[in-house]
Structure formats: structure tokens, C-alpha cells
Length: 269
Image 1 (cartoon, rainbow, N blue to C red):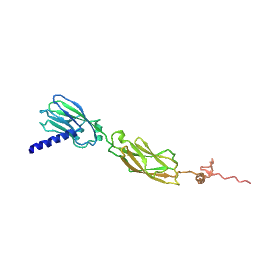
Image 2: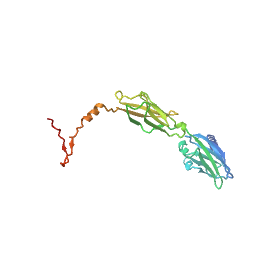
Image 3: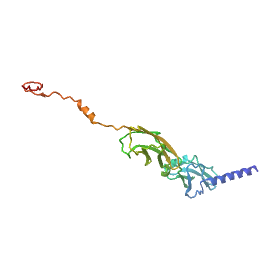
Image 4: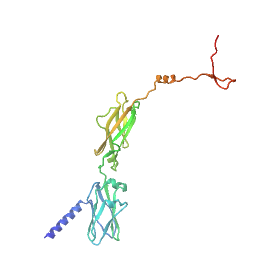
């Protein structure tokens, strides 16, 4: 009776595994097959494929196109079994898989027989927040800078692989300075001047810029803009410069002398 209940439990566990796997298939070691196991979002951890074998078939898991598969998947199989399970070693990460191709590819290879190619598509999930390259950005700007000029660029990087999930929106958090705005430009945030600066009114602006992706994941950085007074050259300063110049005595060359002598003004009688 005890053995009967053990068999029932094992049967239930097998059914659960088969239902929870992404895909299932039968392998005949007399001929090869090529199929797509399915599609799954990154972060998945568990059974990938349940494989039904013939009584005399023996199989192994081998990489196909890239060796990365051996760090992500394993084959649970004992020689003589009629079932093999491909399962994850760790949660699947799209960013780890993407450099090798659009899908995770592997072989279920028969001993002295054909290879059975499998493709598992792993879908990107927005699981990485944008991260600013610096927690503090600063710049010194002349009060003569033209309105509409970009005075500073801030940059946040999102590690998600797909364009949609890594797109970033930049904004200035309240209190928003009236002299600046942030404009998106090829994943950068350009800090742009919106009104003339006046050194006598404000010498420094400090504000917070936020980077946020489509999934509301975000990061912030602090921006400091120091206003520099415009340098001016006045006519009075120029006259003062000239007043410091003292002319030399006027000299003449006399053919009967070896040196220059000062020219004496003639006496009038």
C-alpha cells in the first residue's frame, strides 16, 4: 500500500512538471527534429521542455550557436529513463542572452544519432531602471549666454536591451527654476536656457533632474549652474592705460659725434 501511494505522488509530480514546462516534445533518435519550444518572459525559472524518449534512446544537452546555454540550462536525465527535462539553472536574463542572438538555442543530441535543435525565445521585461552617470553635474555660465543655448548635458543609461524599455524621459523636479528646462536628445538630457541670466539677481541655480523609463523606474541627479558676471572694458580703463606711457627724449644723429645727443630747442632772441 505504501508503495502504491509513492507511485501516485511521483505520477502527480510528473504531471505537474509537464504542465508547468514551457513546451514538450517526443524525440526519435532515428531522425532529427528542429522546433521552437516557446516564448517566455525573462526572469523565468523552472522547467523549459519535457522530452519523451524511446526505451533505448540516450541523450545529452549540447550548445547550439553559442555556449551560453550551458550556463543557463541543464538536462535532468538518467540513462534508461523515457523522460528527460530541460530546466533552468538560474532565472533567464534577456540582457545576458541578447548578445548571442534573438533566442536561446540548444541541441538535444542522441548518442550515435542525430541532433535535435531547439529554440527558446526569451522576451525582454522592463526590469532595469535608468541610472545617471554622475550624481552631481555642474557648469559655469556667463550671464551673456543667449537664450535657447544648451548649457549642460546630463546622461542616464538604462540596461534594458529593447528600445522601448530603455527609452528615457527627463524632467526637472519642483521647485523648477524659471531660467532652465531639460530637453530629451538621443538618450541625453540637455539643460537649456529659457530666459536671460542676471548675475546681480541670481548667482547660482541648484535643482534636481529626474530620468524615468516607460515602466516608471527612475533615478535623480543634482545640477548646479553658477552664473558668471559678464566682463566689460570701459573707455576710462583704456584712457588710464594710455596715460601710463611716457615718451622718450627726441634724439638726433650728428655726423661729427659717435653717439646720439638730445636735441636742444633753439633759443629765440
